Image 1 (tube, one colour):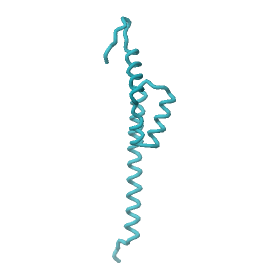
Image 2: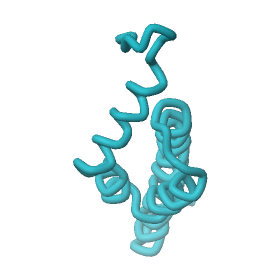
Image 3: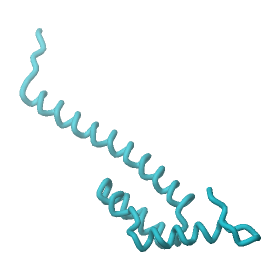
Image 4: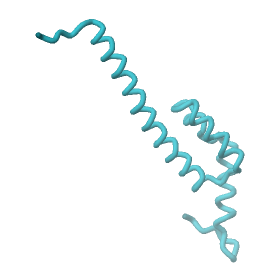
Length: 97
């Protein structure tokens, strides 16, 4: 008895490959998301509420969420101001990183 590939077999194979690819890409997206969140919490001084909002945005919107996550000009100026205030020594001089 010879085995033949039927149309339903090919369709089933395509569906399986699409689902497997989605699972693999989803896994890598989760890893990348947690790396970005870890970086954000370590290097960007923002509030806990803003951290949660950013996490939800990145989790549900993916690449577009990462683009939206980037701080605007006003937030960037506030971050720079906080970093320079935190890096002043006793003499009032700024220590460059």
